[in-house]
Length: 93
Image (cartoon, rainbow, N blue to C red):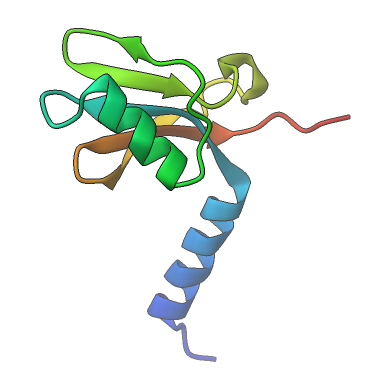
């Protein structure tokens, strides 16, 4: 049987997407203001209740960090000037 690299990588990435959830959105300054970050989050169907500001970014939490498997969180780019902290959620019992 021949190994289909593209098919296997595509399957892995699909599985990875299904197993990870967004913990927090990060919007880089000066590309985003607090207002434009909230608009982007809402337009893309994310929670946009509270915005935290730091020197370099605006952050919008999606769920508590305690809901994730320890050491599973990582930052990925999801758009121009927008990153997401993603990780594996703890299994609900």
